[in-house]
Length: 141
Image 1 (tube, rainbow, N blue to C red):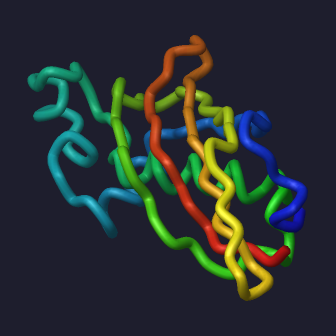
Image 2 (cartoon, helix red, strand yellow; image 1 turned 180 degrees about the vertical axis):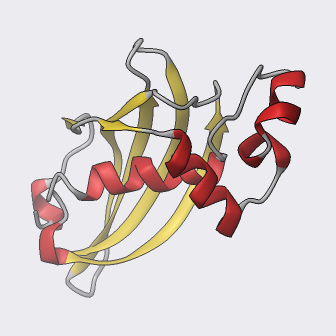
């Protein structure tokens, strides 16, 4: 979609993706090697009662689901900002995540582009919101 096709209040829903223990530990081993993502025994003794996904992984999955809708297509130029990131609930192995995307701002530029800001709200298969964050991208008109 081109910049002009986005409008404030527009809503998109992504498909779902299942998060596995293997996904969690593989991602964490490379990008967030903390015990709550890698060490099942120690994680069971902690506040989450088991391994949870990294918040960084939750952001990446949310973004992947949004991009896979194809809404930006080839008109996107680059991301410009991520703001107000909130990890609301832990993501556990077996959770299936989907994202509701709401366009919250459109700012036209003078150079044939504009900034589209969306609110990503990611939910698990129990419809509990686990993540929320704003994403802004530069996109062609």
